[in-house]
Length: 303
Image (tube, rainbow, N blue to C red; front, side, top):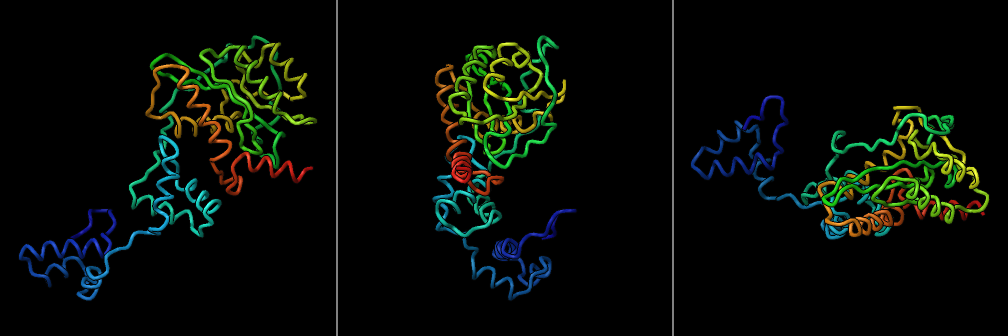
């Protein structure tokens, strides 16, 4: 009955079940209770009152929310959804306990799980000051944004995502998914961004020193759109950490352990995930709102 060296002692009910099993094999109950450190009253109480599942009325909803993504979602996501949509009064740690009882676990990525795409080719065009200086906090949308390119290695080859992430609303406000990380991809992304930008917006956009962002066509387009270009220092990915964090979530929740046979099906599924990110996925830093809800709320207040 002793716990392993350095380990935690078994809970009373687990001890009681072990004692009951050994007692049924002919061992003396008094000796077993002494070895387990259990009082006789505690033993009988534990057997008479089996452990009830935590919040059984919410289990179906917890399973449904967890199953929305191929790799599941974390307990904070489930808790925020239960509070916002179902009106449930429930703490994050209670949801974590429920998910443990149900065998629902969202895996955590290791730092070495994915290879970072690197578009740096030296100084090949115009470079810019690091205006944001790792200050990614914004109190509203269309103030500070970030962009980068991430690579997916698949059976059919490589695919690339180039998004624009709004640091205030946490929304992916524009993106392009392409087989090639070229200027055409950046042009498609900027077309989408320009169509979405509200009149009068003049955000700062953080990016690394990739060749695309130094190119005269890209830099000139940002100037015409009224966007201030801010560049990370060479070899310093933390300067673009807010966008890298989004990539980490995408790789965890959408990509890990999956493969696609063709580009079109991959693109379709990634587009659906981006829509989920913007309209369904709730965020702690947004006080349980989705990015789209936060943006709409902020713009209404500003009107």
